[in-house]
Length: 403
Image (tube, rainbow, N blue to C red; front, side):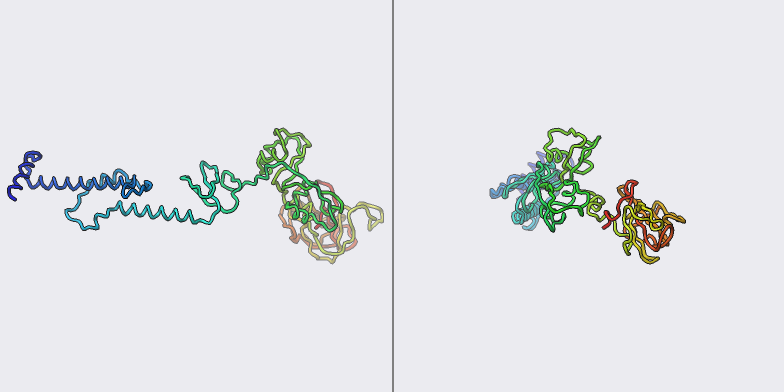
């Protein structure tokens, strides 16, 4: 034993012993270097295993790549002189096992998903893949018929880009515009716009309606209209308008009729055509209508610009449509106490011979809100309400607009 120690001391002293270093110190240093080299070899072997799956020839994907600074720190650690058997299960083995388990769990979730098709999003473009085909790109399950997709991944109604087709329908006894629209899977405003209907209550049995194959509005081109402007106004794709009208250029001519696919009427225009824009401002007995009549005071034939309802003094008067009060006045003759309300689309309503007024100029009132009481003020033969509708500065028949 002593001779063996002497041989080792001699070999060490010849090769690496410096001044002031003992043989035992050099032996310890040599053992430490040997431990570090062994640990580095194990680490390199583990990394090769993770990259190529050489252990057992499994051929796993490269799921983990250790950063370089981990390797350098690991090599610099000193391995204890003695370690229990379980220490040989390194942190790399644990990390590898965890990643493998997560990958398997994700694969199970994808395979067992109830969807019918896969959607792959690549550079904001959506592509449908047949079942069973997988890609390294991000996959999302979709149920139902794939159809077409927009840049945001939402389905696109391709019918908006098809040429317009029109069929003819003859109105039958008992028909309503709403039921005709339902039977053809259309909105009422599509039939109203396409057939230029101004009042649905004037539709007659035997009349013919042109029925398009999809929803949209008919637009009459005016001077200054452009296709891009109409696209923005109706929020409809530029190409959808071109395709629906079988246009080869974007040039428009005044008077040209364009079908705007998918466009809708605003609620004011729709309610106006349906006769639902205005409500009766008061209950009572209808005493006089719009048009010429004998003056109740003189008997002379004069034009009556509104409709009258008679009831007791104090009966509530309601706003026929929502709007802003623009005029409140009391006259000794003529209308007596009266109110004028301004509405959308150039409409105004006038309420005359009121006993009490509850509103003031500039106030906004909602449809059906009480604005005053029925009275007998001004040029009146008894308690009643005189009600007028004014459209673009001209008096019109209220009964043609009241719901």
